[in-house]
Length: 200
Image (cartoon, rainbow, N blue to C red; front, side, top):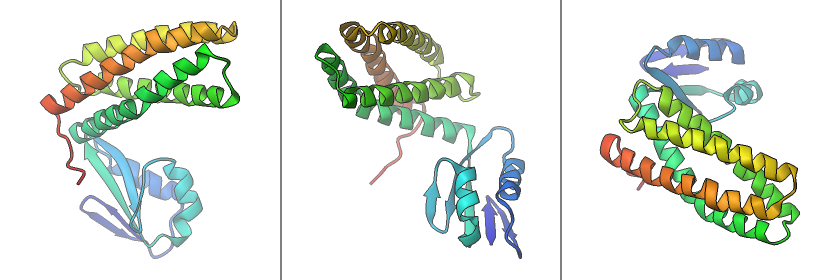
């Protein structure tokens, strides 16, 4: 198997273990750089890297590791967050309306997805605020993170008390404006301080 990390090309005569490969990747990630993803025989793998390697390492001929500078990584984080929000905003609006009526099991499934999305967004905001390459308006992101936490806390109480109308109100008047503001801010940050990749 061939392992490519930047300029390094490592040939393994015998298949390494998933742990050995992960260890080699970690050793190669220097300060100011982030492991982004890897390409296994032409297939890009963005998450659950360890599980992927454990299941597929036996058949992989070439594994290319993609490492990015902190600036490139931050750019990707902001683009992903903006893209997520563009998809989520119409869904969140529809979800708030569903809680005005009697929520179905699908409504609750979509609510769970919303909570997962908010958690992911929260993690992204933490990355932005903790990065050396953070944007100039990062304090606003920090403020939005704490606003989001406050809304989630209210949402948790409303769910406990099974107050559907209150859940709807918190989603519509609490989370939705935060999502809309973040989408606008992410867009402006990308356009002024980072780059939009040409996806065509």
